[in-house]
Image (cartoon, rainbow, N blue to C red; front, side, top):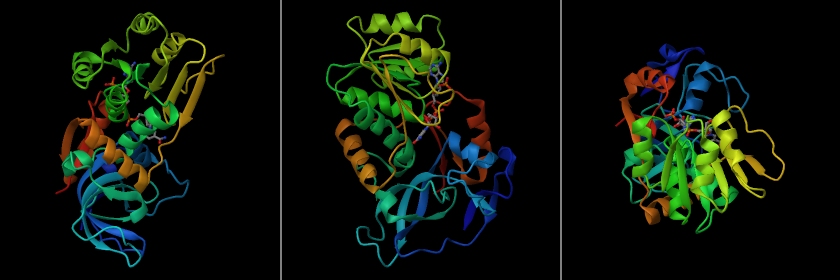
Length: 313
Ligand SMILES: NC(=O)c1ccc[n+]([C@@H]2O[C@H](COP(=O)([O-])OP(=O)(O)OC[C@H]3O[C@@H](n4cnc5c(N)ncnc54)[C@H](OP(=O)(O)O)[C@@H]3O)[C@@H](O)[C@H]2O)c1
């Protein structure tokens, strides 16, 4: 099969098309003919030498931690799927979605939301779960609350904004550029502020004169610190681990770093919420498998609206 893989750590040019064997299937795995693979910031970190497990990978290393496709074979112990099922999955431990086929544990796989096609479903296993976990599990967003989604047009933020609206919150989105601010409005934000403006504290206070309830942050730094200043005592901040720098501790404010729980149950929950909410998946750009290096160069430029993907079939 064809796969985009690296033979050593380095820049985007290390990502090259390889011909490699189709992965062997373990009893608890499904073999997916990949339709779409997500391209994310952590893929670039892996390409540069970071390992999510701490173990050194074997080269050639096929990147890609999530995606969608069709099951073409299953291990002897897999009961819940059939060959032909359209699924989405995440595979942080073994990566491998930048390829025509990937073997994934059935316990990290679920049927795609019926409201999405394979292309859009392939963009959200990790960002969608992370967004939903932030809104539901960590912040427990409720009807009528006032929430800031900081970084509302990225992979996680564009989904978190829509999930917060679905839970009945009023949402102030931060975004950058006219295009970013316009996308945040289209995704349903009640108000949008330029995340690089100097008066973020004032803007957040003006949005919620009776007090903000919480912030979901997908980026760190001064703008986030300015937003946190607007929270009253008892306010909450949630951020997915990985944002830099991490927010500083503040008296009277609960600040929680969390990891998404990437498994079949959470993917099934995400599918339910996608179907019920009609949330949209914004694809910033799609690249061919052979252009994986170009996708990584695009990622490095920044200001991606929504999500980058590789279109493999
Ligand atoms: N631990 C976990 O389970 C987990 C899972 C998923 C993600 N993460 C982490 O979560 C973070 C977000 O991931 P992602 O995939 O959503 O990344 P992303 O697509 O790059 O999103 C980050 C967003 O923050 C925006 N941003 C940065 N500074 C801003 C500012 N001052 N005002 C407004 N927006 C601003 C960026 O917008 P522009 O570039 O357009 O300005 C971008 O859209 C990353 O650090 C990732 O590693 C962790």
